[in-house]
Length: 174
Image 1: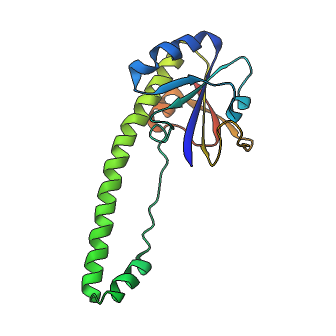
Image 2: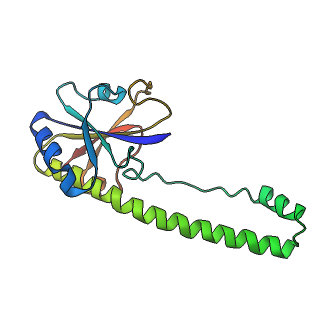
Image 3: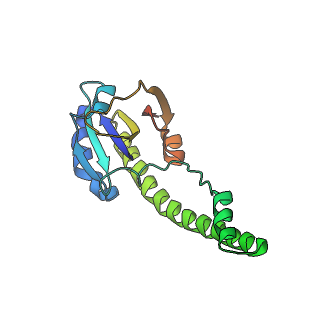
């Protein structure tokens, strides 16, 4: 279960993607023609699978909500003989530590995702038609069936500021 980003550009911009992807961020750019996401774009567009460390999870920032199963944890601590006050302190400390860890992890992910968006905008600024699609694959990138995505247009500024939603073919516009 990983995110994978497919970037599609018009033919003239394909060489820019190949050459300059590594100068904007440490992403891996692989030409893609055999993934199911390729069918979502115009046939004449060059398609690239964009990854970092084997997937695109660090390049696509999904808002996550962490659910702490406090009742289950509370029951475990009661079985150990802990007092209610001690249990409450432990749960509060655990929750705070989880929050700090998530904030640090999200800050690093935000930097990587921002660099990726800056790269996409730099390709757009060269006059290219640019489309992006991100999907959380449960199976093979090559064979997983995708649902029909929504097609959206976002401005350059919107794309830079907040990125793009998953499961949508997003076109960057002026």
